[in-house]
Image (cartoon, rainbow, N blue to C red; front, side):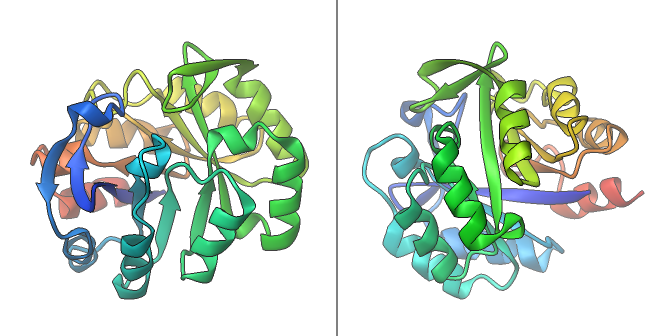
Length: 237
């Protein structure tokens, strides 16, 4: 199991969100690179960088993303509104180890096919954001008539290997991740990284016990509910 400390960026600053709402963001730091390097110094094997402005259609942080990818010394998984081939290609060219295909993009089977053929399953993760079991897009304000499991099965059949599963109702709420939903996707034969809601070391133990591939942790780290070294020791125990 891998741990992915999150660096969520809005307007060039690291922020903490509640249910992904940009208007509820609380600034944490003006130095995203410094935050990521701090995680690396504390033992992180990955960091998870998200451009919230791009995700919500309010501009982007491309210049920062390029600098971030050049400077950070551990592998970086990049997400946040990456819905086109050009955007995904760009992040990989700039040094991202893995790019998260945005949920909206993942609903386009032809796009997923092209991306997997060009980059391979190891360089891509498919984001599946869900609300009440259904796929949620456009900053989680629009629901598709497609369940998370149906989308997961489709991308698995196309050759995808890794899914980042987020129950959007839990994101930033510190109510625990949707381990049952993530486990159901993993049962299809996918490596699932749980995102949204991790609040305690017990939550991480639940993710590990479910046999999931990893967990993304953000607000709990920034609010000091546990430290990154504590979390890393927890998942290694």
